[in-house]
Structures are given as C-alpha cells and as structure tokens.
Image 1 (cartoon, rainbow, N blue to C red):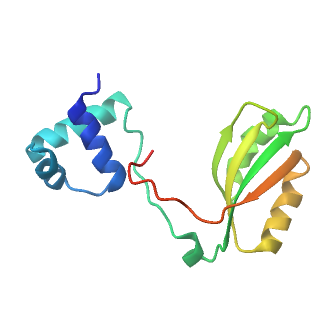
Image 2 (image 1 turned 90 degrees about the vertical axis):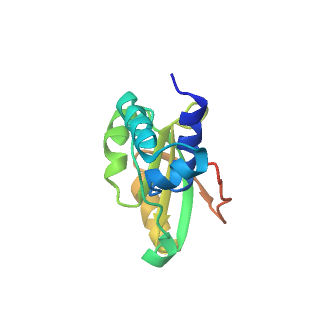
Length: 142
C-alpha cells in the first residue's frame, strides 16, 4: 500500500529524480534513512519503475517533434509492434484504442527527415502527423 508520505516522495522525485534523500527528507520532515527505506520499498514494489533524463531535443539537432497516429494495415500489427522501438527517431510508443492502433512521439531534424520517416511508416499503415508546437510543463510529473 502506498501511503500519503510515499506519494509526497513520489511527487518530489517526479520534479527532480536526482534529489538527495536528505533534501527530500527536509521537505517532508523525515530522516534521509527513512526516505531511502521508503524509496527502496517503492522500487521493490515496482511503483517506481525507473529514473530518466529529459533531453533538450533542439540542442541535439532535432528541430521537430511530432505525434504520429498510425492506423495499421491488416496483418502488419504484430510486425510493427516488434519493430517500432528500433527506429532511432521514436521516443515513446503506445498501443491505443479507437480508429488508430499506435500513438508515437517522434523527434526529427527537419521537415525532410519527417517526410523520410513517414515514407518508412506507410508500408505498415496510414499515418496522421501532428506537429508539436510547444510543451506545457507539468510540475506534478506523470
């Protein structure tokens, strides 16, 4: 069972996954060792699955970020599910319900790179591309 204190710890880690146990403890009135024990328990239970890095894609040369909704052709779903994460442009993939089968977040250098990526996808299905204009920061995390 996840307690209210555990939820506070999770909230602080979502804001800054590199925060020290001492820093977290100061914010919620726990000792660093108590925070460490709670974080370890959350990891052991699988509540905390991983820690990550958020990259500035523009500084890495990727000027475009898009969502692509993909309606897969009959007989191609199993194959695309096994292959989609091998594409270096792909950041996140979700299998979804509704008229589309796959929702993908992709980073690309420019419009030409987008065109080439779409050309790669159309052998699997019909893509709908949505250009991301900006991200709305979520201070609570996900």
